[in-house]
Length: 573
Image (tube, rainbow, N blue to C red; front, side, top):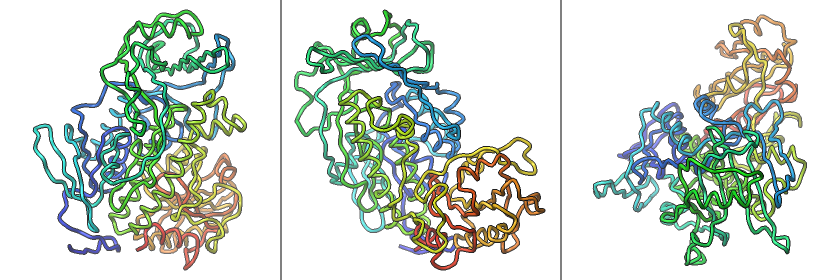
């Protein structure tokens, strides 16, 4: 074991094959790998399958996931391939009950979308290839051991050859039946639904409006739901992924195995035919229709489970390896992708000398409560009538389903207001909350207004400084210089100046306290001031788009200040 000094931080070095080994190359594993590479960490990504599966499994993409993909630099390819989800048509016993419109506040930059999982994986795999990293196919993780310095994993290749891979960390993105979770000995408590379902990717010839999902249910004499149909639009002309209850001839005789078995996901050997799909449509479709062009079908089961912790030592889990639940509201894949994004930047910093124990404790503290909330909410929705039965006003329900209300106020990596001198007032996003996008930012060379997310794209931590007047500019310069010194230049800064600020600094760019240039953008439409509170404030934005700390007014991050405390928690030893 050797120790080298890199960027002012101490980093352990030993003979390893890669920084991080990731098991599982679905959307979660691909996101983790791409984000690790973007943040400068090395990784290897192994998957037991010879190729991605051509199945439209997880198809709903939440607005928050699109924001994450924007930060990663991959959202353009998604927007070219996906289709909008405009709403949902709800039917009960053949009668239309509601037409739900999926509307969000105008400052939210993305809408709800649908994209087959194999397309999501293709886009992420192509994005990962930009960093020179490819999936190691037909390579399966068998076992691993870990010590204080790293992990030794045993994998088997397509030829049957067993090999050892040495890494500093291991991440299990290997699904509901995760080898990593089992070998790590994590508890996976929960239960399963007794019903079986079938999925099919088909075209229908009905006249229902495009872009709307369809949810139809039938009730027995006692008022219980005894039949259901859920259709999610896919790219193509009247193409849908249809979910239905399994007919008796396709039902498993064993009822799904042992009571404590993880019965979740697709099953082989019992693929429904077009006749099974048509029989359900004949009973449940809002209008007579014929199904055709069956691309894929399967039987699947649903369980609901959550691990007791998201990792142990240098081994961690994400996605379905950590939480499984009903597909109501398309929460699963999206939650897993955001797990991966949260974990990746923390691992990259831990590799670069950051406080490993605190960073990884922050991953569990931030993401396990989210997993618990999603499991509980989707189980309730599955037992009721979908998101339409959720409590609260519909606007809040939509924000929650879009995953825009996820926040980490209790994270050990977040500096709450009042925890250190220089805490801000109550207006604007609080530490731990998602940083909203805003429009109307202009610069000397940009004749077209920019969005805040344009300025954050493909970056790590960023210090955003708001100057509500010319008198705030010197403090912004001091804050920018101080953060640069504390992080050895790894956190860039820029100023957003109120539209009333008319000074040479606002026109040509601000200089920090060390005489270095700090870009200045003008809040020409006043949207930044409206969304962020309007007072001169320094905002430390994390790589995943959440606010790590804020300090008002902007000033050099002195000992004990909010900015200094945030840097210590994330970058310090």
